Image (cartoon, rainbow over all chains, first blue to last red; front, top):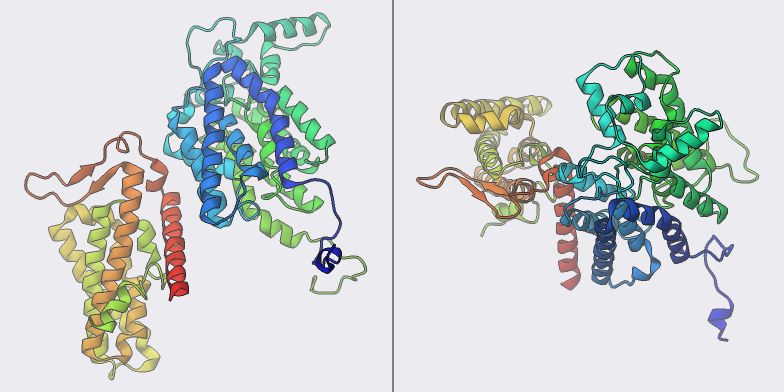
Length: 364
Length: 207
């Protein structure tokens, strides 16, 4: 062993951990797989093609961009994860060029234009989704009914959130609730939802088929976002492996749920404290966003307090966009906006170094 | 070619190097025709203001120089505004508030203050021509990228049998509409600036 390798001189951090970038990326991807399999099961093989195309395009863009910079980064797995998340964020009937454009934009412009993994200030997958969402709005609303619906008389259907949003624009809802409204407009449900519902009802707990469908993913929606149940399982796996800490998902979902509970009922003239929390927490991309995209290590704060501020901000913004904005869904935009605040949060929520006394006039 | 003329086109390009005049570069770069119209307006105003500032530089008291420049510039902007409204009402309509805003376009005020007020008439004229050519090139480049990607068209002036709009097949059917929104303007502007920075740096490293 030569002199140089025995004594390595380098700056902090000196504590070693067995986690590697690639290892983390593969664990996150693994945790996402069950929800993806469910998406392919309910929306058909075409959605598998959408996911694979996204992954291939983002890997190709990563290879090309890294090549241009004389680096080799494909093996760190971040591009595959970005592609996977973009595929999960696409509606099942999306025209196939859209996931490709989203992936290339995410990797080449959002990530590599700022210097590659670790230098991007915005979640690449979400930025890719926002880019194509505002470019090809109709293509990004190509929802498909899940194959598990009992009485499906058409191929496409609005998402639960979209259906309620459009319905509320037509008629001023009175006395109802978001979940009840689905029943009013004859929104379809699955045999599975019915079975779960009757099982619970026989045990004396009132559960509508919609509850079960929202939770298990028998609803139209983006390929990977529908199954809240499998996403939660994946999230628990990541928390168990300490890749995701509880602060961001919990503060995000709780703050969002609280705001929904307090204010959402006013849309139906039911006053305060009467919102459909269950519907809004499980009815869209919140679980996928809160567990897998808001927690992206590069674009989230590093301190515990910062993470909670970030989560609460994302929850409040999601609430504002969903309830008072013109779009039915607001998770991706909320997380992107909070990504922009991350450097500021990190700056003002610095932990006090050990042994430093606070002086008047702030930290110096 | 004269150095005072060429510096404005590349080395000191107002949009990509000096970062002046960004408000119209973002605001009216949605269509190529608007960019060209805006460039023509800026050329006229800058030429006029540079000539007058250069001629009057010994008479303008230093303490009141900015208001004096604004008066000169505003007079030329008023001329542009009236001429455009009379002879190109469509262009005037689509440029909207950005025509009167030429008054506070920082390229023009910047050149009056930094160049014309301390240089000869001849050099000031060359400077105005070069700077407005550089501005026109930058603005038209941004507009070209934005319109081609964001609408799939290139809008020019109708001449004879040519209706004035070039449609690009495929892109025209499903354009990436985000480029014609304001987010697209910032995106294109930033990426072009990054590209030119990278390009000039790699050339400097070569030499």
